[in-house]
Length: 86
View (spheres, rainbow, N blue to C red):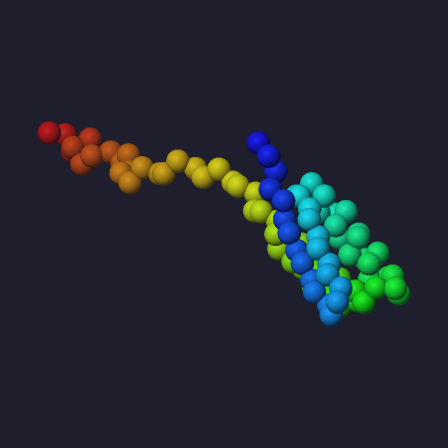
């Protein structure tokens, strides 16, 4: 099964920042955001990195937890006749 590709984009004036990543590369993407923010030649700021990192984290798909089978609606209590006879 192919992995989904997540896409995040930021437009700042004439600059365009486009981030493509899959779930297995999420940590690498967060590191790149920090590198971009620390680069004085880019207009990408630490605020931009913080906002984008929140979006990266928000794209995480929740792990599916198997649902237990539905419980029986009927209780297995003894019948009244079990105590008093027929």
